[in-house]
Amino acid sequence: DVKVTQSSRYLVKRTGEKVFLECVQDMDHENMFWYRQDPGLGLRLIYFSYDVKMKEKGDIPEGYSVSREKKERFSLILESASTNQTSMYLCASTAWGDEAFFGQGTRLTVV
Amino acid sequence: RKEVEQDPGPFNVPEGATVAFNCTYSNSASQSFFWYRQDCRKEPKLLMSVYSSGNEDGRFTAQLNRASQYISLLIRDSKLSDSATYLCVVTTPRDDKIIFGKGTRLHILP
Image (tube, rainbow over all chains, first blue to last red; front, side, top):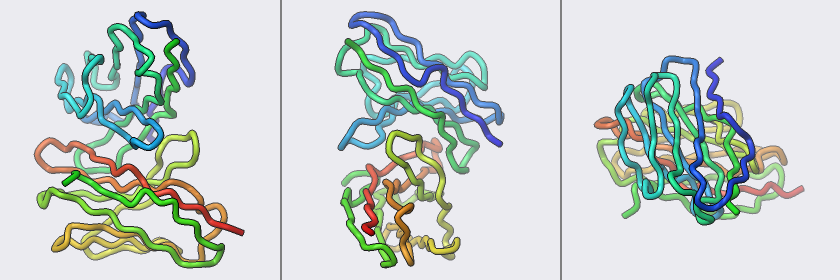
């Protein structure tokens, strides 16, 4: 079974902190994605990567950065967390043109 | 026009009824299409892929209309457990970006 694992289910951070969200997949997928999901706004793409050390901005990259040093790991970084980044963060991975598999999500609260 | 559009609902449907939703997409070069189901506070999970010839899985039927650029999902004999949000997903060939619709909420009423 494909497994996509996110490092934390729930996280509480203070405004201004640097936050790391980690995502690991075990199916050798090329493509990995970070989304945030908010009520009424659906899933919004933050960043995606289709190869090691490659990254592409999604629809809402401001305030975020990413790192993909190894194929199986895609990290989302909040450089200086703000309260408007309180959200559910979902990581996904996929092979080309195939279905996406999601991690269980990280519910981040910034106080 | 948004890349992928869905009616957000909610669709309130009595148990046993048939319900259908559509999803429109703007990029005619889109290549792969899926329906995902998301339960409250859970991650989305694949419900079914959508093939050009249409496909059926039990009570669920998915269809693709390339000419009009939409996909559809039909649920027959709906069950209480079908209550969820259904997300339409489209991928584009150039960069394999996955684009999600905002989802359609379905409530099956006893």
